[in-house]
Amino acid sequence: MTNLAENLRDLQQRFTVAAEAATDERALESLRVAYLGRNGEVTKLRRAIGELPAHERPQAGKAVNDVVAVMEERLRRRLENFDSRKVASELAASIDVTFPAIPAALGSLHPVRRIIDESCAYFRRHGFAVVVGAEAESDYYNFDALNIPSDHPSRESFDSFRLSDGMLLRPHTSAMQIRTMQRHRPPVAIVAPGKCYRRDAVDARHLFQFHQVEGLLVAEGIHFGHLKGMLTRLCRQLFGPDQNVRFRPSYFPFTEPSAEVDTTCPKCRGARGPCSMCGGSGWIELGGAGMVHPCVLREVGYEPDRYSGWAFGFGVERLGLARYEVDDIRRFVASDRDFLTQLA
Image (tube, rainbow, N blue to C red; front, top):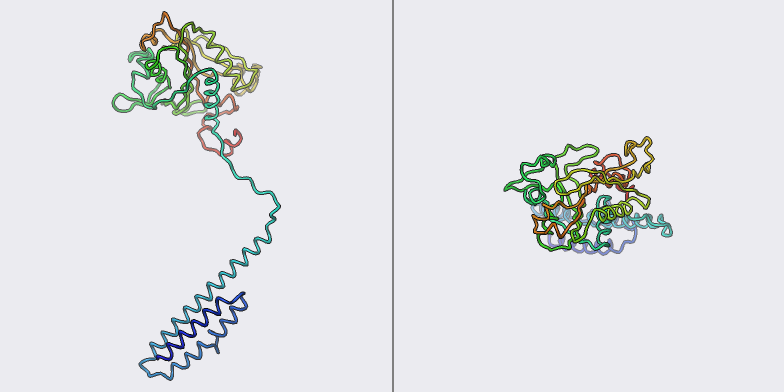
């Protein structure tokens, strides 16, 4: 048994050296035949087991089988190594390294974010600061400070999402106008972008979560003409130099006088013919605007006799509908890669 163990160790060492030295599949096959074949060296050792005492034969047979298993595993790994090299070599030979590479897929800004960035950049160029705030605000900042008391009927139109402790998800970003005026004395010039929430039924023109861009300017000598000039230039920044803007009389509790702001339909260019976007009117509604109500100025400690200001609020997705000629506002939140790629 001692001689058999020594022979097995010697055999395994010689086999390992020969396997590592093999350079191709043919050499490995020759090695397998020489050691594991019918007349190989392992077979000779097995025949020698019959010369051992009967009680040593089972242990000797097990020792031989263990060595054979190790040798077969080494052969398998070396063969796999040759196969992987062969595949890599064939692949390398089939690749034309002079052929232009496939361009990497790059992301882009979401169209809603792009409109927000361009709007804010426009106002920054005119000296406005960009302010952002919490999406959960109190009744005071969402309504009371904006001349909308608890019994005011216009509160119903906001359809707010109520939270605990008198808080709610903001239905507009106007709370940042109040907070800014409370912290700073005039002149104040800000633009406030951000998410808003209303319990609107989702359809082609409404979402329960949307984005707004609101602006505020308060100083001495501010009048409606300043508002018209700023918003007209904003529309031409977003839609092109030929855009016209009109202001229709309206009502908002926090501005007086108030107006709805429309711009020329980007699709029919105001032709007032059959148009799926504007319905033939030639105009697209963007949002509301007006002069800051004196009650709002008094609430934040400003003197209405000395200071005046204007404010506006546009829905960003509404701007996107007009700018990109999209027929359904839900497409902006559907995460459709093909759709977003077209607008990139």
